[in-house]
Length: 336
Image (cartoon, rainbow, N blue to C red; front, side):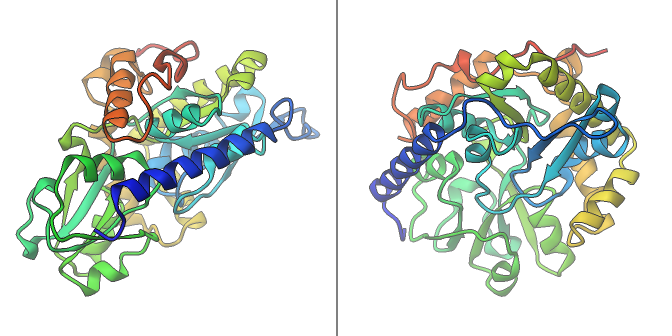
């Protein structure tokens, strides 16, 4: 592989140090926007990627006025590859952000007191996309290819630690399917309702291999804030979580208006791709756990397993993070 495990681990520690410095530069409390003339409180939510189906519930809550019903005017800020969501939340640039559960653990290991509030995706949509013609049918079979991975997320470290990946050259992933279309020995990371769907639309024989099937399954599209926001503004947090939970329920039942809106803010996500994203998301969001406890539910056992896997992969050190401090269920409503 092009990057050694030791080198990647060193890069991770450097990133942790930088994040810690950013946290120390943070202002004393989360900066909230001035109120509107209607008395609405303005807050910002930073996405972890370009707007797509994985953000549908949040856009639904915004589009259908569910945030405004709680006297909040919420602005959603788009992201992209390696979007600095944690840094923006930790330094008070935004009140809320989206990341995966492993991003929360990374943040806390770096000294940033980020807390998970709501986790719509019980099953992580992360996948590796291969060509069917390659004959690869499982992640452990990946060999003799170029593999496009973001270096920062824990899943890439876990996979390289767990599987041999013989004769694999790892290159950065920049969010484009173009290299995949040109090379049948090219493998890329993706979300099951995004990259593989787009690649198929463009004529590629794309097969999605779910990372969750390896046992590494962090909650996804997780709504986060700082400990300070949670403790000092519980009313604000409760309002945003409640509206987000309702938004996800609305989106999965009536997605068309929200998909039309997402298409306007990200034209690369056409209506067919977004529709496919909703259908794929239903099983990832509404599993047995969510049907019993409500959309967004989290368990300490899942967080504990994730922390153990990240320790195994050398991403964090043993005992560096207290998992009970990574999340809270205090603002979630139970399933109807």
